Image 1 (cartoon, rainbow, N blue to C red):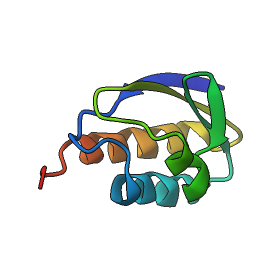
Image 2: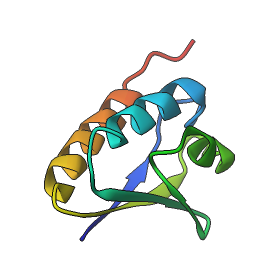
Image 3: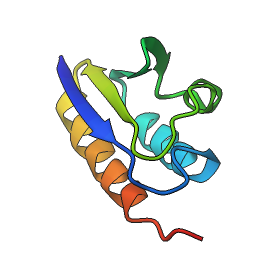
Image 4: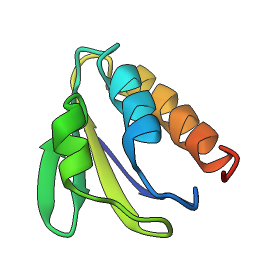
Length: 90
């Protein structure tokens, strides 16, 4: 199991476009990927679950990866979050 804490610095938070990027990447892996924010846990493979958390800019959240491809999933999601934080603010 791998656990990592992240912060979204993208000014609009984890809204539809960045959430879709995250969910799309998560669905490429068999491992269970859980996103936790304010003591609420959802699967990172569900767009509705991720959006329901309403993660704003500058908020900290935790991701947990568990499964046979957890290392690859962690590396891929880590890169996705890096790219989300580099999205241009419109």
